[in-house]
Length: 337
Ligand code: AHG
Ligand code: MN
Ligand code: MN
Ligand code: MN
Image 1 (cartoon, helix red, strand yellow):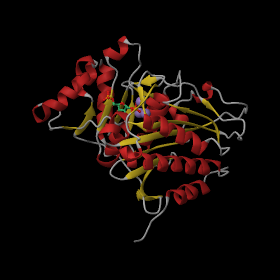
Image 2 (cartoon, helix red, strand yellow; image 1 turned 90 degrees about the horizontal axis):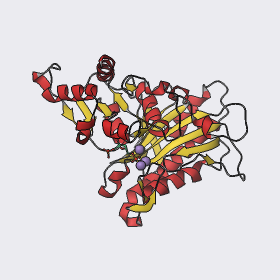
Image 3 (cartoon, protein in one colour; image 1 turned 120 degrees about the horizontal axis):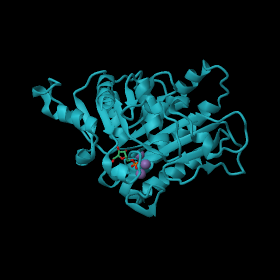
Image 4 (cartoon, helix red, strand yellow; image 1 turned 90 degrees about the vertical axis):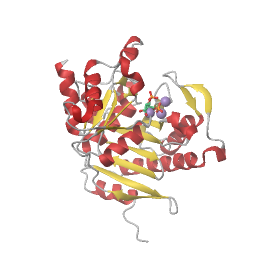
């Protein structure tokens, strides 16, 4: 069997043309790839290694942590902290930023990640993933602070995700399109299988947790109602619906065949003073970067997500992303309202 380009080769060749590249960024991406391979291995073995179930602890957002949430977080730290390429880390599963131990050199990149996305799927053996985003630290060196992480999504240097599904995949952007790689378990390498992924502009498929329907705002209600009426309504075609409860799997489906994904603002969250469900720095921004680079769009409702000025490490935002024409339609409904 002929094997194509490995992810390591792909990243190195892409960076060869980058002005001022020192190899730090390439090395950091490789460490992230290693972390995702380790997580993939744990996820694959599941119950055989006692990896399922709850860890009995809570994260800063009050979610019960699964064993694999905690383990994946540790693997990310372990694979990246030693290298001298990162200045600090931030993750869904850590209340504060993670400062690099004094024993290791500091680097010029900041890494944010959702170590295990879709963790309600773990125990039922359905797809989960990992999301990451890389930012550059300000040139004024010194120790990184939380403030250094509060950069708009447009400042991301790279972002991507790993999907632990029927096959393990890694999908990546460095601002130069989106490429997908599939893990060949026999040789332990991600191989380029999905070059230049693009999201179809139009779609007849949407994804939303409809159990929240009674709490949605008017523009989202209108959009979903029109999809449900189908051919008989203003859309003039029938729609299909999917909800996996793993943003990674959802975005991957959209990158593959189009669609729109929504976790919009609702009145229940508003009551709790919550700005949305998904987290800006390690879910919404990296996924928005990937989606936009694949020709799609990503908004909160009225605003482009990547232009938001973050106010906190774990800030939550409403997310509407996917096929460009559908997202623009939804933005239109929000602007009318
Ligand atoms: P996480 O498992 O990292 O906490 O994220 C779960 C997120 C996201 O992946 C998914 O789209 C959504 O939460 C599912 O929410 P519901 O359980 O409300 O459907
Ligand atoms: Mn969680
Ligand atoms: Mn998540
Ligand atoms: Mn998570």
